[in-house]
Length: 552
Image (cartoon, rainbow, N blue to C red; front, side):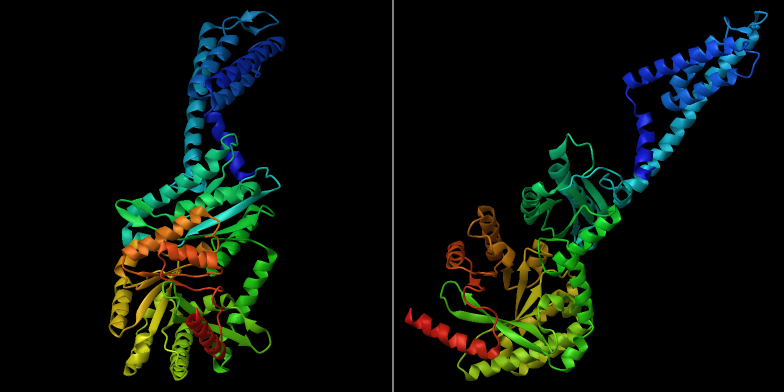
């Protein structure tokens, strides 16, 4: 028997309605009466068959509790009492003391059996709460999910949602705030996924770990339900006068295989979504294969650095008011000798998790400085930005490396560091201090991929960012989705309120440009203007673009 089903069936006996208990009582009393006739037929109470009546009373106490057990003891004792002969052959009646003793013994036994089973059921109930339900949200937990049995519809899927910054929330805002936050999150999920299916008694929302939930839903509901989730959590959540923007990623898996396997597949998809800064990812066998390939590829990175297989491309940033190129983003690329051009998301996430990030960051900065200096000889005077993970600012070696370029104040003044928003602050004071020291040299900071990762107003207010970059996932639907336009507008307003300029990434059409201009967005990047280009390609594009601008 399934663990969950067994425990729940036992607990159901304890919570049986009064009507069902009355029907059960009637049935058991009828059985007692039949046993009494059976004992009479076999010769009376002198035989050991009277213990059949006792076993029914004990069972009745288990089913109906102390009061029910006592009542069954009373009826059982009466059926074998004053009207039942001790010996039906001679019709010798029982002594009064004998049947009265049995009567009170039956009542006592029925009552005690009920007390014992209630005590055991209370223990089972408490154990099930501890082992099968999350103590904070009272939702069924991972153990419940992995052991449950239920019939699934063919189109059902499992989603795993993890809130990335939960432990940092505890450190920075306290356990009470984090508890209230996670309770509010669970209430939202229950409202969306449980209350919509009130006719379905099954659980659809599960609290797997401190910061992780699982949801069962049908394929037909996915678009509408997750659109609600997206709109809900994009907005700030207010708890105890603290405004917080949740950071989360979703992995989705079809309901194929065991519950444990389904969770593993959804988790693989979630990690892929996090790595690629996507709202959600749907599992496929190819996804697992790709993750394995990416891991193997990461082992080749030291060789690639030594063999100079990396190179930079430049993605222009356009001022939406003047239409001029006012900066470029330097992006690292990898030309593998056997596999050709490797996409950045196949190796950058692995670099960020190792000490190689220091070496690669130094190479990117050094190469960008050199090539920007060369652009000046082509009469191209532009700022440039480099992507770095936030945690690297805690490394004094990197800070000293950047500071060494202050001997060339013209070049260092052009540098902007784009902080990946998927990174959390490990040492807030140290990071803030490092950023302020670099700003004194003239270096600017952008918050990259805003809206996809860690984004509390507290961080944005206290860290000295000059710009925020709205991720392309918000811009791609801006032409046709009114709710997305509202989200982008609110982000622009937040940035301007905090004294920051706003850059929109992933701009691909003139209509999107016009919408962003009307919203007051400051800069745009995207294929509408140009794709990321190598150094020679950018030189040619820049000259052509400037010629076109002058003509227009």
